Length: 310
Ligand code: SF4
Ligand code: SF4
Ligand code: FES
Image (cartoon, rainbow, N blue to C red; front, side, top):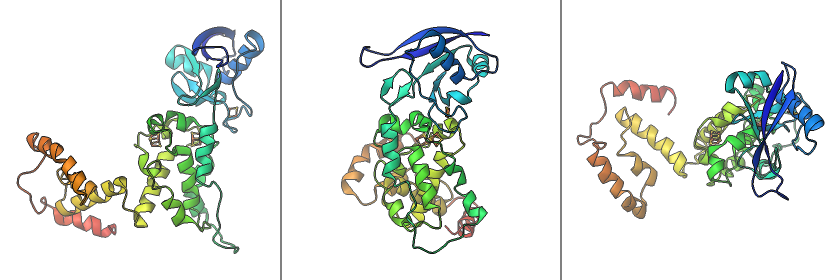
């Protein structure tokens, strides 16, 4: 079948800005986007630049934006894209510097991974057997092929370049969950800074785009839980979670008027800053005028907390 591909081209040495160019080529009905790109490069325009190697969704190098979504070109069928979008539009991974055409600069991605110390720091020199059930807690993280799709899709990374990002944080969880790791507490401590685990806004995009089902956001949530269990409760994010739980345990439901106080604590300047917010909440009826000791059925809610050890 003859298909038209719209491909973003940009050579920073020659072009002022990226532009889309159109290519028509004959491809098989079961062709992947990568096969189509190879055909365009070999038969139409040899100057087109893209990255690829394994052609089997193993090396992670052909990650790009296909019809607005971060995907592996070697795992994406041309026909499926045409059926769904009626066209094939290809661009490099967003939020990364373009080296040329579809080749994005993966340097910042690798720096983030390196920053989490991506290797095991063993407790000692003895042998520790790991059960299959323990392995299961992190083996899907080991499936990561470092394609960078999750970082390109990440909302937090878009506004906060320093954010460690989904792949690096998922990799960090892999070591935190490993019983052989001797540096678990130090690892957790190193992720409490403003670009660490609490910078994730839980948009779920990293889970949606990951071609290997690593589910980075879920690993970030597990690190948050482990941090709170280790007593690391000084960040705003952790105070939000513990404050939320405290209020529900005490009153049986969320009291939005009490949440800012839980977040700010005894910081006088911070308390003064939220007075206008408090007034607006009062006007909108968000502050209960009759503070109750708890909703009906509060005893059952407290029992749930007790049973879960909270
Ligand atoms: S869930 Fe968190 S880490 Fe994942 S894409 Fe959204 S902000 Fe980024
Ligand atoms: S977590 Fe998934 S999307 Fe992110 S780099 Fe690894 S394989 Fe790619
Ligand atoms: S070429 Fe290796 S993942 Fe696509």
